[in-house]
Length: 186
Image 1: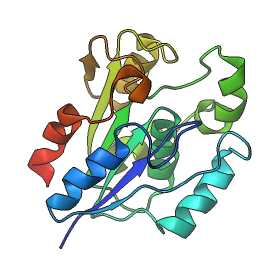
Image 2 (image 1 turned 90 degrees about the vertical axis):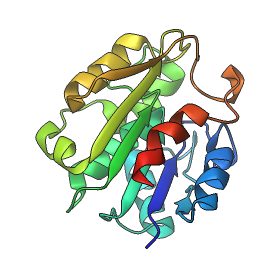
Image 3 (image 1 turned 180 degrees about the vertical axis):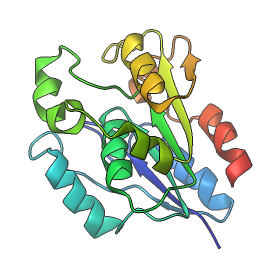
């Protein structure tokens, strides 16, 4: 039975941006089902609107899933995992963060996702094999925010030096490093 791999974009993102189409193509070649939902952003972006969009486009979190979130998409994964009835196979948090970034344009739309206390034991239980990947020169997410996320998930931080926000503006239209990390689970 193929795995369901869900890739969640970030604020201002879209399914055909960054490395998402490339990863979908590579994973589809291995026989997996890959879904990249579209979420309202920046206008209409809230945790509630994203949950509703996820339910329509994906359904619910299932045990045969691998979740991949980029930027606020990683924050969205925390909320999904906190509410999930069962653990997933793995969760990948790319350029993820907790709390405010001190970027007013983003903090207001990201607040409902990451500015609260989480049930970390439940998230850790439901996240499966977790991996937190951040860069040391991200123009939006300080490395300390990735370190904080990794600490809460009780996993080591995977550092990609000089990778910016790990998006297309940083040269990431493909992401072989992530595919390699996922390979043992496919």
